[in-house]
Image 1 (cartoon, one colour):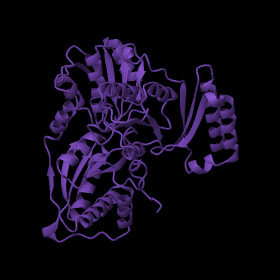
Image 2 (cartoon, rainbow, N blue to C red; image 1 turned 30 degrees about the horizontal axis):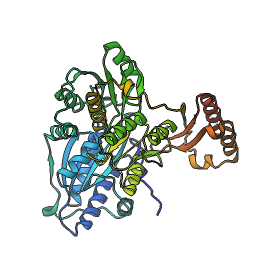
Image 3 (cartoon, helix red, strand yellow; image 1 turned 60 degrees about the horizontal axis):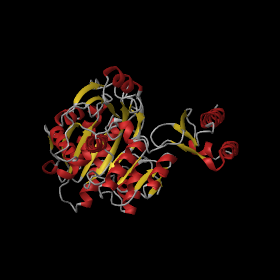
Image 4 (spheres, rainbow, N blue to C red; image 1 turned 135 degrees about the horizontal axis):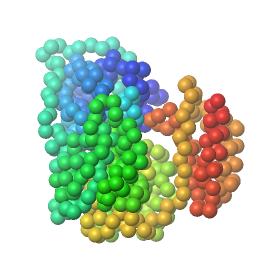
Length: 451
């Protein structure tokens, strides 16, 4: 069946434009509630709702709450909470589902909805399709004595803080470590600083004053320049940056070098293998750097590539029975402790490695030699069909020409974004190849076809 609303990462778009409207969210809450009640054979269901710091989150929280209540579902309101925190609390509250109101790394004018199952993982495709089917039914309200109740949890942040700290051994102390933490004015603003400080680190904050409009604005993991400047200015040992909903992380070392998801995956995989705790291999994506694959191979660690998107990473992890996977963008799934990508948890694993080995970040990564990789995002014009564009013979010929220039020493990946109106152009190759020029050439071809 064809999806009408759910994409690879829930439902996302511009606030005020269908389907990201208050009336749709009311109906979505009701439809999800009806599906959950049916799956429970009529037993009363409970759903958690959390959000990031966008101003539109208040409106959509109220709409979802009303729809769920009308369907006879109890609601637990968590307030601002990182996406992985909602996944964790959905499990610990023994809820039937969790709802995240967030557009992740997008600007404040966008918003979206993601669902977690009772197990803290993304809803199965068939459940999402049942919710879409229910959206076509007329909205009805259960009798007054069966309406769902709503409660707000005041200690949600504290519960998640303690969980994050529990993912590293008690003996790990960050005492003496000077960090800059960039919260992207997003959902980690009141959680990440406490986690690192309570473990002993000296923390300087940026991007920790959300006002509803500044989420991801020139801060966070998608804008590392702010963190890099702060680390160098403060003379810090490292910096950590999250995206708006806290499921992505990147790091900056003391010299200002960027540590991305591939670097983080490598560090965690190598450490867990050395301690006999890896439990299989590592799942990356089509965007994962060639150097990561080679470095893991040198350690005899199996590596597989999934389609881009944390949903696909987790699906392959489940299929392989592995417990570590992630994306170069910074979605890291530490399956031994968490059920979804978690920026704070991933950062803690790296910090624990630094403490155990008594080495700075750049020294931990000396054995990982990454291939030059250039990613260019080409914004689609209004109404443009990304997949149709990619089927045009002219563009296919341009891709073949770049592939021929790379030979067997590089690769090309052209794909539409699953979360934004973009076509992503990636070219990767050995250091002597002009990957930057080839990427720009291919991006220019996409832009000309759009024009």
